[in-house]
Amino acid sequence: MRHRLYARLHGLVILIFQVSADLGVLRVTNYVTPPLSSDYCLVYNSKWTHLPQTSNNATSYVLKNIIYTELCKNSDVPAGGIKDEAVAVMRGNCTFVEKGRIAQAAGAGAMLIASEDGLVPPSGNQTDYDNITIPVVMIKSRDILDVEKTLGKNVRVQLFSPPVSVFDYSILIIFLIAMFTVSVGGYWSGVPDEDTGGRSLSDSGNSEKKQSDKNVSFTVFTVLIFVAVCCVMLVLLYFFYKYLVYVVIAIFCLASALALYNCLSALVTKITVGRCRFTFRTKVIEVRLLFLATFCIALAVIWAVFRNEERWVWILQNILGIAFCINFIKTLKMPNFKLCVLLLILLLIYDVFFVFITPFFTKNGQSIMIEVAAGPSSDEKTGGDILEVPADTPAPQEKLPVVIRVPRLMNSAQTQCTVMFSLLGFGDMIVPGLLIAYCRRFDVRIDSRIYFISCTLAYAVGMVIAFTVLILTKMGQPALLYLVPFTIITSTVIAWRRGEIKMFWKGSSYEVLESSRKPLLQDDEPPGVISE
Image (cartoon, rainbow, N blue to C red; front, top):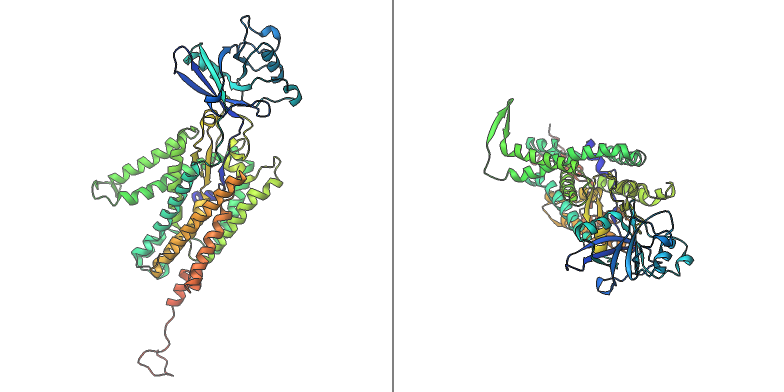
């Protein structure tokens, strides 16, 4: 059970982040051999500098590269002058305002301040900057060196800042992934019951008992222990993140590889070809399943090795994560609606507490949930402006791999500066998915589809509401705050309207109680005679 418990340790929060409006694009073009050009990231202070939104409206300047100097005094201005040029200088021991004054006095059209550390918006006294009319922006020194290497010295530059869109289509991808996961996991959970004619686990024969051995069912006690362990582990991760993160990564690799194998083997065994077998120590091994196991392990190992490659490794993490959630939902079965309600409400309280209440107790005012979900010192945990663009060679930031991550489909300024992700915690799929799975199995028992379909649609509506609130508030949201009420209320209303609320509430235990009754009278015996 250990590998299953950590799925709720964090990630019960949707995080979709806006990128600061102070990010822009530096477009560099070789004016001798056009249209050879490249785009680079720049950071500026919108209170000081106004940049056009498109390159069509941006002024073109000849680039004067003098990053060997800091331009902190008038004598630093090159002999040839910098009139009407964009001058690139090194960040140094004088203020941004002092650099801007010297460049403007020399007739420069724009100032590019190169930094070897990180990029922060130029700052200083607003009154001092009022007299500076030229754009002053920050760029990476690495980018200026790359310009000279790839485009040469005869280049012109344009500075502009594309607008940040309110809606990002990565939200739609997250939504589709969540719906696919809970639908497949919930439907698959009911397949064994469907194969046994809808009988409950308690009433089934030996074949059903073998199937139940592969599944795990909750009780009231295990629900309480489960939630308590989640709380303790989340707090431990908050205080000992840099140590425990590697434990979670190792568990994720093992659990996700096993889950992916379970999911794919169900498909592979349907294929009628390639059933070659061999015997190893009295065990019969099927070759195609051996290759499948190797593939699943290799996928998990590749993710572990390249887990900090932001540009593409999220694809592997999502594949492994989806398999993990589907396998969790179809394996761990809730015996009745009563335990579903208990589990979902307790985890809802857990979710809201660690997102909204814990900021009042932490030193930095950040919620424990978001701090753990995005990783300490991560830009992804902020719902507002980015205050700093990473340095040229930032150290990789280890993050808990228990979220679905989809890169924001961003404009060019955001793409050049940093990779931002929309995140959805595994728990936001697993926890409601357990209720959806119970509805599916209950449908099988009563020969219906209404509970599974209605609960899945309620989950979709809850996700849409959560995304809407997130976009409007620009704050990370505890998704269970919306998913739990919609799924529980919808399932309750359906059961009440159909007159099945008692059976739905007690689940298989209700069926056992009804089926265990034995008549006291035989059909052929008169009243008052008790058969022996």
